[in-house]
Each structure stands twice: as C-alpha cells, then as structure tokens.
Image 1 (tube, rainbow, N blue to C red):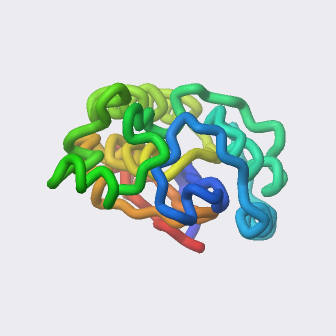
Image 2 (cartoon, rainbow, N blue to C red; image 1 turned 45 degrees about the vertical axis):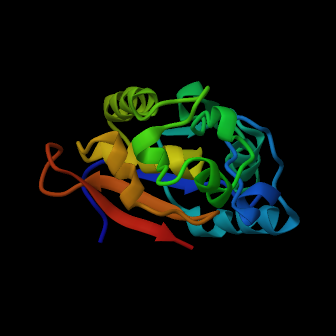
Length: 192
C-alpha cells in the first residue's frame, strides 16, 4: 500500500570481496565483485517507476557504483553517509576481533582509532534531519552498519539499537511514517 507521507528508500551497496568474506569495510575503497555489479544492475528494475525528490550516496565507490548501475548515477554525495570508521578493526572479521577483545560489539564498543557509537549516531542524526527537511521521497545508497545506525535514529532509538537490524548486500529497505509525520516507522526491510 502506498503511503501518503514521504518515504526514504535505503539501498545497501552490492557485494564486495570484503563484504562476501565478512571483513569490516569502512573507509577502504573496495570495488564491487562481478556478482555485486549484477545485483546492483538488478536494482534498476526493482526501483523503476519510483519518484524521488533527492538521490543521495555515500562517498564510497561501492555505493556510488551501485547507484550508477541501478540507474541513479547522478546521486548527490553526502559525506555523512559513509560507513563507520572501523579504525584498527578495518579489514578484520568479527571473529578475529573477538580473539583479541572477547565480547566486543560494534554497536556498543565502537572501534579503537575509529568511530564510537555516538560519533556514528551524530552523523546519522544529521542525515535524519536532512531527510525530514526534504519533505519528499529520498533514495539513499550506503553501507550496512551506517544504514542500521540511521534506521535506529530515524525511529528515535539509541544508535546502539542499530544492532537489531541486519542488511544484505543490494537490499532495499523503506523508512516512512504511519498515521502522520510524528510517527516514524520501518515500512519494509531488507528486501532482496
């Protein structure tokens, strides 16, 4: 059912070598795999016919390339849409981090020499404010952990609650409102 209120369509970038292997990919500029490019191109059909007031992308090449292959190469680059800065954990898998730091959780502990949960939450808050100011439908291309943080903040939850949302590569999710614009909701999630 179509909503009479603005919708925010979130697209996680297509697969990269690091996302396929589970490595934390924050600021490293890892390109899409062939499978990732194919999935990104498939987004064009899934997003066809939708009207967007604005199209935004993370500065990463994986997000920009996903937007381009989906037919939205003119996306405006928003630095605040960048993936978390994983600092010392960049390129590591969670299981490798847990050997060094048992019990570690990104959404609770952040990353040494990288971002804290409050840092990522502050960036998400700036994006949420900008989204609400557009007053229309916005298409956003970014990465998993940041989009999860953004979703938590959209709902008014602490940034740490982004841990509750999981996103697959080249997935589409939609944020919006229920009865009026004072009731932000998740309308659809992680559709592949």
